[in-house]
Image (cartoon, rainbow, N blue to C red):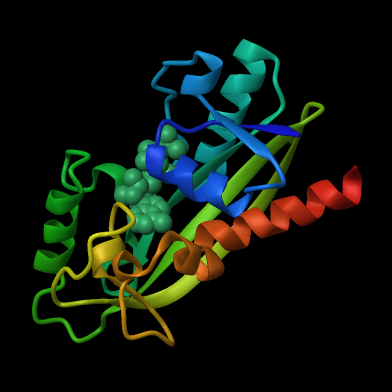
Amino acid sequence: KKLVFATNNQHKTEEIRSALKGQYEVLNLEDIGCFADIPETSGTFAGNATLKSSYVVAHYNLDCFADDSGLEIEALNNEPGVYSARYSGSRDSLENMNLVLEKLEGNSNRKARFKTVISLMQNGKNHLFEGLVEGTIREELSGKMGFGYDPIFQPNGYDITFAEMSMDEKNRISHRAIALAKMIDFLKETH
Ligand code: ITT
């Protein structure tokens, strides 16, 4: 079975492929020949995920799903939120993490959470699935795996960051894995 995943982010594709190994073949935007920079102008995760999935339905007439995700930091009024990919003005993860660490300097409230909303477009209908993981922002970067803000995010109940986990370990607890599991349950119920 094939699923189209409307993303340009290779790391997201790898995580989703690994989580669905043996169950679904996952095609991303590149695989369907889409090289557009789909506008993400909605201001909410659900809205942006829906913009991405709807784009593929409109231009390729394929059912598909999209993930919009980001990091919400309590002491920063839930920033970077939907602006996570370009918080510092660039897509450079190091610059984005450094900006977060700078803004949190001297702040003892390090509470944060990762959020994913998946929009699944199926037969013209939009189905939304959310995943959340609570944690804290470290004082310094640690670990080399994963992507984005993984080196500064420590999930609650662990003493390592997402970037110190293997993909399998991260996929057992991550925001993306939680949202994805909900979508897979839905697909199993409805097929
Ligand atoms: P697509 O829109 O093409 O899917 P993107 O990278 O632009 O790719 P988003 O708009 O959803 O994706 O932005 C999400 C950003 O949030 C992402 O670039 C990372 O900086 C951060 N992020 C999301 N999930 C993450 C994760 O699991 N680990 C670390 N950072 C993550």
